[in-house]
Every structure is written in structure tokens, then in C-alpha cells.
Amino acid sequence: MNIREIQLHESPPMDLLLMADPSQKLVAAYLEGGDCYVLEEKDQIIGVYVLIPTRTGTVELINIAVAETAQGKGIGKLLVMDALKRARRDGFKIIEIGTGNSSIGQLALYQKCGFRITAIDRDFFIRHYDTPIYENGIWCRDMIRLSQVL
Ligand code: COA
Image (cartoon, rainbow, N blue to C red; front, side, top):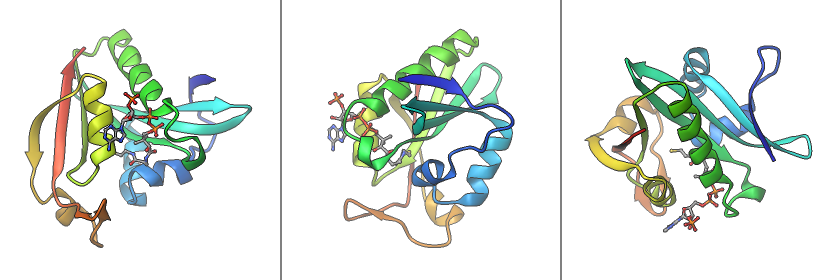
């Protein structure tokens, strides 16, 4: 398995990116301002994440996704750990990530990778998305913000 930055001439894996964020508009904006990394297995892209600088010394990990057929095998964790390594290497001091209050598995994954909850952006998903989002039987309303020192 190989994790690499996507090249300018390549199309980003929109199907995967939209799994992490259903808003085409927001995904396009993230791609514009960030660097997109993909994980390939046998020439197939099965994982993706984007790193986007937000403030001096701070970078945000967004749009992390693993193809459905490849989930639950440690690839998500591998991508998060790779993002931490790259962000540290690129000189960032803090890495942040945000996820929905209903994203139970994601909250577990990020905390297992060293992130701690720092803030809650209440009603974020109501303000930014036209249709209500439900996951695990929970209405996704609030953005849970997590971070860690690199
Ligand atoms: N309770 C406790 N731990 C849980 C859990 C739960 N409900 N759900 C997941 N985990 C843990 C797993 O046990 C694993 O930890 P371990 O290695 O200690 O066992 C870890 O979280 C993640 O497992 P992993 O196999 O590395 O994740 P994955 O390859 O399935 O990828 C996502 C995780 C989130 C990237 C993947 O599910 C995905 O693409 N989801 C759709 C897109 C998305 O929601 N992206 C995030 C937007 S914020």
C-alpha cells in the first residue's frame, strides 16, 4: 500500500471525498485550499484525506475516507497516522479535526489516534447543510472539534 499526494493532472476521488462530506461545494473549497493524499492498493484508490492549513502553525485534517469494502481493516488509522507524520514533517505545531456528534466510530478513531476534544460548534450542520443528517440513529447537529499537539 502506498500513500501519496495527488498530482495536479489527476482528478481527486470525489466518490470517496463525498463519503466524508456530502457537500460538493465544501469538498471543492477544501481541495482548492488543501493538499489531497490518496492510498492505493493494486492501482485502485481506496483511501483519501486532505490537509489544509488554517492558521499559523495549525493544519486541519479533513475529508478522510476509506472505500466501504476496505473499511474496518485499520486503513483509517493508517491514514490518520500518516497525516500526523506529514503535518509534523511540514512544520505544523497543531493538528485539528472536526466530526459530527453522531459520528461515533470517527470519534473513537480520532481519540485512539491521540486527538482530544477541544470545542463544540453547536448547530454547525444545521447552518451548513440543507438536509438533516442522521447517523447511528442520532441527529447530526453539532461539530465536535478535536486537536493534538504535533
Ligand atoms: N467504538 C469503538 N471503537 C470504534 C468504533 C466504535 N463504535 N468504531 C470504530 N472504532 C475503532 C476501530 O475499532 C478502530 O480502532 P482499533 O484499530 O483500535 O481497533 C478504529 O476505530 C478505526 O478503524 P479503521 O479500520 O482504521 O477505520 P476504517 O478503515 O474503517 O476508516 C473511516 C474509518 C471513518 C475513515 C471510514 O469509516 C469512512 O470512510 N467513513 C466514511 C467517511 C467518513 O465518515 N469520514 C470521516 C468524516 S469526519
